[in-house]
Image (spheres, rainbow, N blue to C red):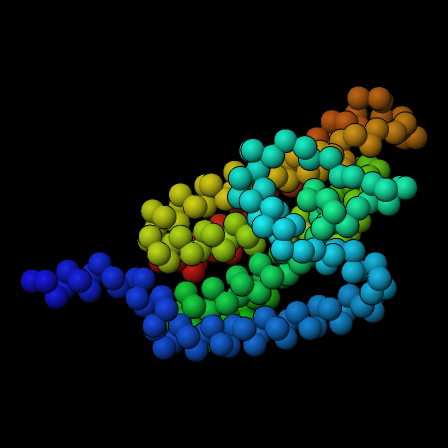
Amino acid sequence: MAGPSNDMQGGPAVNLFTDPMANAAMVYGSSLANQGKDIVNKEISRFMSVNKLKYFFAVDTRYVLKKLMILMFPYTHQDWEVRYHRDTPLTPRQDVNAPDLYIPTMAFITYILLAGMALGIQKRFSPEVLGLCASTALVWIIIEVLVMLLSLYLLTVHSDLSTFDLIAYSGYKYVGMIFTVLSGLLFGSDGYYVALVWSSCALMFFIVRSLKMKILPSISSDSMGMGSNAKPQLRLYITVATAVFQPIIIYWLTSHLVR
């Protein structure tokens, strides 16, 4: 009677780290993620100077830890204003509110590794499935950024948001996705949905407060004759729509990994 009980109690946690299929999936996922990182960095360098890109990777351990805490517990953060020095935004290591690409990049790689582990544990791993998972996650980010840029352009909303700012804010969702998948693997479907609700609410709050400082204050005169109150309302719609869209993507990219 004791034997089956011990197996049932330690099954998921043990399998998570000792399953050979999961380990093999993690190795392949690591290789795939590194290849994807190299390709992305190569393509980025074609369109943007390395010096400009370095700004988004100017981080240190203190910044990363503080940013992760803000992403998971944004309700305790009070000052959301991005700081400038002579009209130039401070680097992430100098200002925790500055967007960065280091955390989204590392979180994306970790997500792919975790996806490979989850698929391996469930005996569903194959290079094609993991490749589809990685490409789908990357495509969603691209679509989200393009929609955001198009919305700002069509609605003639002026802000200081760059394309890489939008990539950074969109990429922060991978932190919540890692937490959600890991909770599902360790604690089953109940843990998954609890983590999904928490990470979704935290990310929506973070996005609204962050984009509010970038989009909503930039009030300018309307050359198209829409009226003085139309611009702030449009900015609010864009900010809220971006935030509400985050839980949908998180669920779409993580639900199939936890069964």
